[in-house]
Image (tube, rainbow, N blue to C red; front, side, top):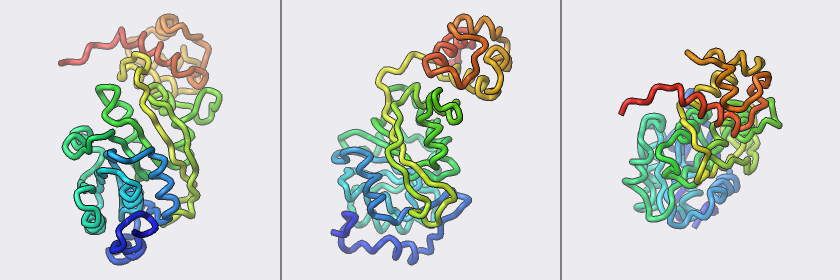
Length: 295
C-alpha cells in the first residue's frame, strides 16, 4: 500500500495530473490538494468511515477521493462535471473495485438523495468535499434546505474559503460575519470549524486560506417554515444597517411592527443582534401570512 492507503500499483497523484494534463480551471473554482497529510486529515475529520457512503463533490484528479477510500469508506460517490478528470478517476475506481462510483454531472442539478439510495453501502451516508469555491455556498444552502428532515446524511465535512467558514459558524457575538447564512445553517445544524488549510497547500494556491467545517444535523430543530425563514432573513440582512422595523418593510403585504410584536422582538434592534431563535420566531409569525404551497 502507498502512503495514502492506495494499492501500490496506483501512481502518485502528481504523475496522474501530468499524465492527463489536469491544470486546475479557475472557471470551475478548482484548487487541487496533493498533500497526503492534509487529505488524510480531512478524511479522518469525516468520522469513522467503515460501512459509510461518502458523497464527494468536485474530486478533480482524486486526491481526497484516495484518502476517503484509503481510510475505509465502503463507497464513495464522486460527482465531477469536468470531463478531463474522468479518466483519472476511472483509474482510481479500477484500483478500488466496486467502491468508487463516478457521476459525470453538475452537483447543483442532481438529486443526491436518490443517487445515494442507488449506490449506498449499509451504513450512514455523509458528504465530504473540497468544494469548488464558486458553488460551495449554493450547495450548502441546498443541503440545509433538504426535506424531509432529519436528512439522508448524518454529517457534512466541507472545505470553504476561510471567510465563508467564518460566516457559517458566526453568532451575534461576531457581528462582522453573522448573517443569513449563519442563521440558516445553525437553525438546522451544529457547526464548527475543524482546522485551517494554508493557501500554499493547493495547486494553484488561492489568494486566501481555507477551513474545513463540520456540520452535524440537529435531530429536532425548532419548527419553522423554510420559505418564511429565507424571506425574513433576506429582508433583515439585506438592509442590515437599518432597524428591523424599517428593514422588514421590504416584505410584501406585511405590517412590520405587527410582525415584530408577534415574534416578541424589539423593533429598534438590527438583524445582527437577533439570534437564531429570534429569527425562527419571526419566521413563524411571517409564515402565518404566507399562502399555502400548492400540493
